Length: 113
Image (cartoon, rainbow, N blue to C red; front, side, top):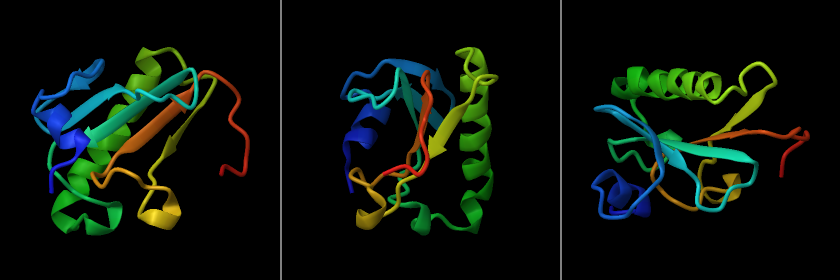
């Protein structure tokens, strides 16, 4: 199933990319919810976290490790940041291509939502 994120991976839609390798693409969210709002996506089209299988374990870990590295690169790791994965409708997922939100640059309240 094609999504806006798969089109960004194929470079059919422009994005302000902050990181890219063979498996992961990270870019600025076009509707940021914090001063820093980066989306990290696997290039492999996995619709939801529920759809990831055992073969995706290294990829999922790589997404989290890369998110932490981007936070360090942006200078927000020490003050703090939040990673969010919305899954399915009640979880707030609107694009059915697994993605991790990296939010930072202001205090983030709890509970979210």
